[in-house]
Image (cartoon, rainbow, N blue to C red; front, side, top):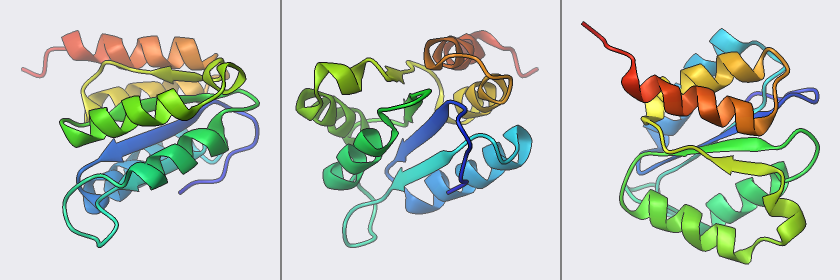
Length: 136
């Protein structure tokens, strides 16, 4: 996790702790130290899966200040984020944007946007726009 100083945060939710932490490291190197990036990957026992409690904790911890963009990979990570959202207050929800975006490309785009001082909604839009970027 990278500690930030008031910029929009990113929460990366994956079935794999290694994917989440590796992507957090990569995005953090690109965005710089102002962007806080939380990796919430893997099951409670370290296996593949999603720890709903960790996801809820990450969302609650980022649901203030400039807020956060949440990015997910698939399956239970999506379900865990949806379940966590149902546990949050309306005030907490005002500080979060869940991006319907590819995890890697979306995280990098959101991190770059967050580093410019934009809002969490703007960073989420940047993540979602990454869906249409051609690779070849």
